[in-house]
Image (cartoon, rainbow over all chains, first blue to last red; front, side, top):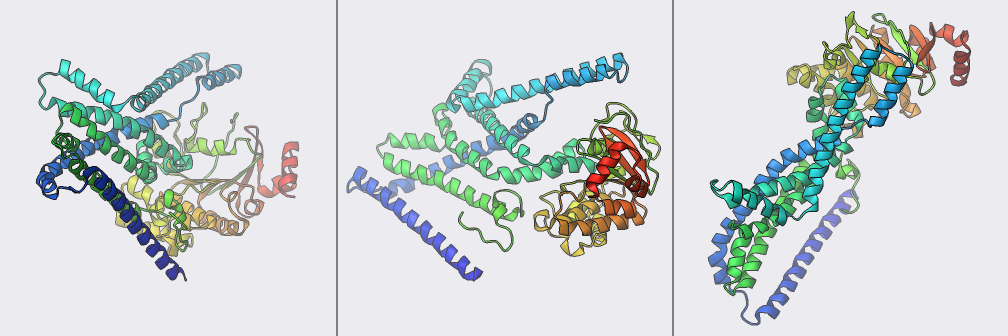
Length: 311
Length: 226
């Protein structure tokens, strides 16, 4: 019974996929027909530019992956700092008043303790506010403006560094995705139940140990989908690099488009971008299945003996 | 909040702490393994003054295990990995040695067959028994139980209490916050009634139950024995 059901499910999925592909190709063909008339796609021409386009696509993936990877480090740190709990100053003052009223400890100890806690807590608040500001700045301003800013700073103050345009785009994309990932990580880390940390600490793990062995493995499983999303978004955003002379995929597309073969160039570029994101999605899907754990994350419904209804 | 609580637990003792909610029972336990830093007062474990800057809280927590009301098993680890993670990551034991010990402990709590199950695949009672094995793995000098059966469905309470009773008979030092009066009667060497952060009454369970001296104890006992 369950087996038969599974067979039907798989077949339906296949049919749906095939149908979708047929529809998309049909629409594109129709569009091409309208735009190109009887000329059709110049396949020879496309073969000619394919090599250069492929190389350019590799550069697109390279710049995206590099900034994404560094962004993971930034995002984790920012997310961790932002997810740390801070005690409102009002509570500290209240506790201090209670302690003073009940005359627990000497007045000197009380005052010193209170001052230290106040300074430390103020410091944590400040760090958190700065991190919040960083994330808001990265989310709230266009990436294009950010790249322009970094690019102009390098232009004025770092005239001698090699590949300045490439570095400018890379740095801007890195701090941008770092901000976005900071938000993703904050959400992931905060979703892990506080009891998990308490149990880890009670076992004798350090603060970092609890993060490394308990919180992070769970949080990473939870944030894999938004992180994948972020990578795909970043890959597409990397097309902005063409404006700064970085010879990635869009750079050549634009160049070829001016030669009058815009349809060929755009089709080829789109196919390459699609191929990258599609491959990534497939890889992530495999990784997710490989590391899936019952009762954790989006696949929670898929425990042994329970069929998913519709994904 | 605790006010002037003085508690001395001898090796092998089983102390059961009762009291209305908000009376400071959980805080008392958490002060012992420093999950809550006491504002003042001193905590000694095996004669060592532990709540000083000179002692790492991580060291203290290795000496005293803890079992939680909501189990808090690590969701991403199997039953066996839950038991061995402390041995491998805190005590730096080899994976093989840790697994051998982990399997032995799982067998001891009656879950040898479940070593590869994830917490979500276990019943509440099974999860809590894994949690006890996890605490035992660190060879603690004592184990703190924070309402270990309150989150359990009635049919699973027995199996957890049985494991705890065996532990107590084997000489483990235990401090148990629990309103399981049957367990307190048959196992506890001492019963403590906590209210508003103070120890109101303490003594042999039978004494406190049958002849509570204090008015508040009497009111509380009559409520939970009903």
